[in-house]
Amino acid sequence: MAEARRAPTRLPPFLILLLVAATTLYPLSFVVANAFRAKAEYLKAPYGWPANWSLNNFVLLIDNYDVIGAATNSVLVIGCALAISLTASTLAAYAIVKLDLPGRRLFGGTFVSVMLVPSQVLIIPVYLLLSSLRLVDTLPGVVLVYAATNIPFGVFFMTAVMRSVPNDIIEAARIDGAGPMRILVSVVVPVLRTSILTLAILAFLAMWNELIFGLILLPSEANNLLTAKMASIGGRFVTNQPLLMAGLLLTSLPPILVLTFLSKYLVSGIAAGMGK
Image 1 (cartoon, helix red, strand yellow):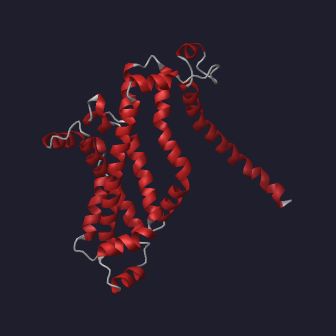
Image 2 (cartoon, rainbow, N blue to C red; image 1 turned 135 degrees about the vertical axis):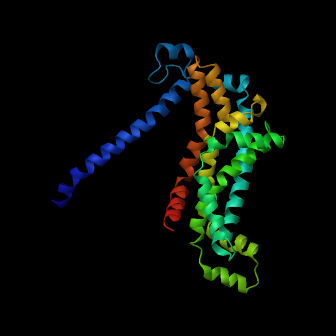
Image 3 (cartoon, rainbow, N blue to C red; image 1 turned 30 degrees about the horizontal axis):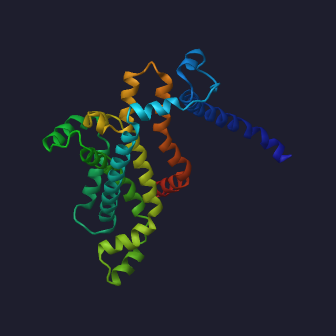
């Protein structure tokens, strides 16, 4: 009887989740269907699954718009920026939490205050700085920008999870003769590997979805990142909607795969950070 009375209370949440799932998946299904649809068929019937599945839109993107080159640029830039931002964030958080350094609280508060500044405000100063360094329209310049804009949140996140590392094991390693860097590499990083992976996922998603810096700092087509390439295709060839849908699908595929296979690490890492 108790289960029978509780059953109706489970139905509305289920319906709400079903509605949210349908609302979320419908745009994705629309993109998938039209990415494999010919333009003529799209003009006649843009809804539903295509009658004849075709890869012509993807072939056109690869052959005529150098999508492979743009994807390669994105991977190189994001990979290097991730390595820099993760290393800097971990080092800074370790110094703030575990080392008795003067001004460490002020140092940590500075990173938090920088997070409050919208990235759009930094476009002109960043462009002028890179121009003076002759790094405009170069991949290393965008690597530095992506790394720098993600370090403040990285320090904030790693500072929270760094407090979960027991001081006892650090003191034991110090008694055994290990220095600060040895303790960080051999003791702290293994304990926080899940949190570091979580930060890597969040930073990857932020960098992959970033558009403004990529458009402004990399104006030449040879240096375009994938998101900027798709934006330029959408602006110039907006009448060919299936081509644009194919580009959107290619651009969305890496984040979808990352969230599909690494979501458990993302959830556990965020929960660990929120609990500290």
